[in-house]
Image 1 (cartoon, rainbow, N blue to C red):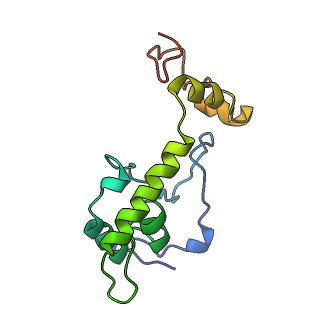
Image 2 (cartoon, rainbow, N blue to C red):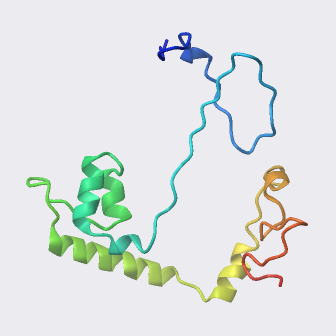
Length: 146
């Protein structure tokens, strides 16, 4: 049970998670809607993020040590919990090299991407494939139409 001042106690065992992809559903008096919305992906290349800010994110539980190492390329000295500058530079260079080894020219990427069609059930909510096109939206997303 959760108690919110001015409200009836809420039995969280009745909480029913729903996917945003589902159609609408009817609510009845007394139903409570809790909406969670994730944040954006941020701005810029994660490898350019100040390593000290990644440590701060780690300390505030915004990222895990795996994410700090594998995504941001920040290596932390396990004894001092400070950034290992040399190891961080090496890890970030390694990640950049991995990216380049997988890189494709745009046309080759789009050829592969357009073949990765989601299931039809998802496309009912998404729209056309490979671009999220609706009849009322005529601007290019990936550049397949103008």
